Length: 236
Picture 1 (cartoon, rainbow, N blue to C red):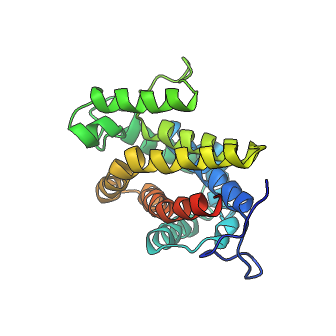
Picture 2 (picture 1 turned 120 degrees about the horizontal axis):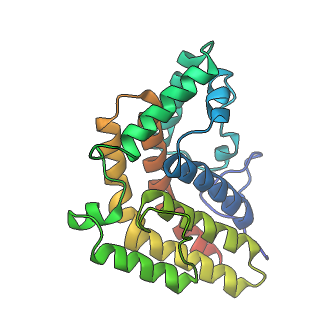
């Protein structure tokens, strides 16, 4: 790709990073986020928290928002409190918390579905529109994934996929197409409900870990609004 420097961002040496660098950073952070929503935290994450190895140095290339900064502070505080704990005990606590939030068996305290936030109930027209957008991008949900396509994990995974497609683009036109799809999906779907979902998760949650994840998710998504706008303009 014939990448252009991006204005409004800073690289490790003060220079503006390239489109490819920003796509890689965004892809990796989307991967981190969607995994936290699609399944319970793995034991490796608990081990990283106990041993203070939970860091996101690559995000220093972006102008971090207050929401993101707050999320990082909360996760760092949780990590400090977790130092010296038994890894298996912390892992069990995280799994129980995830189960209570996103699996049940009782009514979920904060619904992780776009349809609920857009229309006030599950499934229906909002889900149909999300499916139509995925079809436009040429993808379909695997039968192994049981949740509806408007689950937050699936929508974050879709943005991860579009970042990967942008990195793999072999022409400027394909890169612009991938970036435009990202812009449209943010406007038509993610920005309409994910920030409100994150606020509700933050206000409900008792665990500093998931309160921090709520802040990280909201801060990143709000930052995406500006980042993707800049990417689309830079790719012209």
